[in-house]
Image (tube, rainbow, N blue to C red; front, side, top):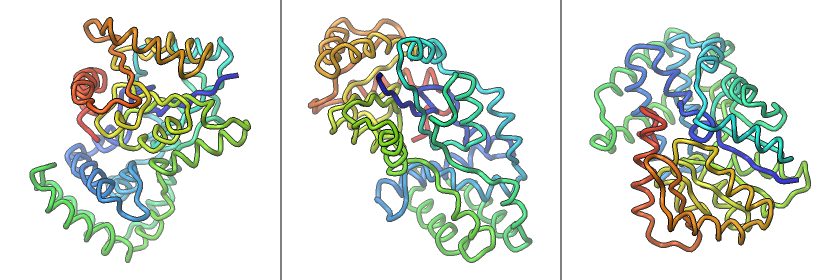
Length: 329
């Protein structure tokens, strides 16, 4: 029996659920881009008790302000597309006797719908709880005014150009003003499954099946996945970066940039037969051949120092596959 765990957004579905949710209200996409940048800044400064992916807690006040419900999330999930080759690969893995898991930062209503569509059992999925209907009950006049003012302020900022201002303004809002409100108290319960929490979820699954991390394959693509990729790679397992960004690639054993997730099947077949040493041979052979068009760009990353060229290839394919979401951290 072999064990594989996927991140959801990127590897299994090209959409960024939170980004799409924020687009349900005017200028929500712009607000999200600033908060996503703020998330990167907090992660890079290694703020205590903050994990990459906590964006999903940070956007909650704005979702509540604009009346976005649990039903809206489920509705969005019903319309979401799957990454090319994802359905094919999951079916193949099931046929080959793998146990398939998903650990995602996204909200439960979205995660359950997409993984169900792919045939991944709900008890093999870890996700972020979102009690949206209960959160709306805590929204009073004071909160509405504070949120509206903050939103107006955020809409005057630009990612990267205004990083210092983004940091100062949102630090004040999220860590000083919001916690004094009823809504702020309830939001503390929303703990997105990113960063170290992904590692905790993976270890829970590993313990449940009594499987060391050296027996696991994990597939991720972004800043929320880097710790999960890192612990599996260091344990001697296989950490795969798929259409990944510069936050995930340095922590991975190998990578694939492709419009089809199913291009991984040969590598996973090799893992089944001879684990990491067999995979290394297959990937290095594929790396010599090179990719064609928008498919099949494999790289062996373990022990590799210079990955600038790899980052550029992934950037191109990531943009292609993930469209707008590709520019997010």
